Image (cartoon, rainbow, N blue to C red; front, side, top):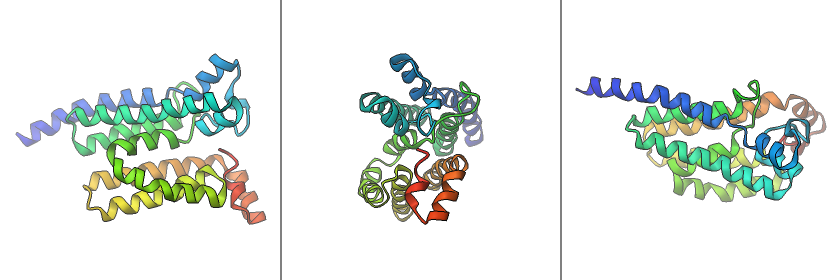
Length: 211
């Protein structure tokens, strides 16, 4: 009976993960830039298709809208996965697929954002209290470095530590670690020139300029 339930859960989780990839891949910043400003955000600023670049290049109103939509996507997809009865590992597959879609969008030839807003939406549903508890660490990271990616790393380290010591289920811990790794690796891959500059000048702020 348990094996049958696992098979059914997998049959639901696989198509749900595909849907999550396609929805996660919807490039909010790109679409709003086109619709509301008539510009391609991939040609502006850091060229990143995310909320931070939208704030800087399209204005705070559009940036805030991009942030809200992307956080909302992460939260809604996590809620749907949790309600689908596919188990914690099934939810893991769905939210990872959504993050991969966001960072390597099928609609933009596998370019995309870095997943910060989407992952925050996911964490707000999976571990809401701990996500809020990690915000002060995020603020401190930003205050010290003035870089959003460093703020994310600081907050993510705090969140993962809280999840690990909080006796959460293994799939939840693995999900938090995996999503953090995806965001950080995406930023590293797309920021190699800035990383070289940061090392050369010993200035961590240069590392965050590709936001």
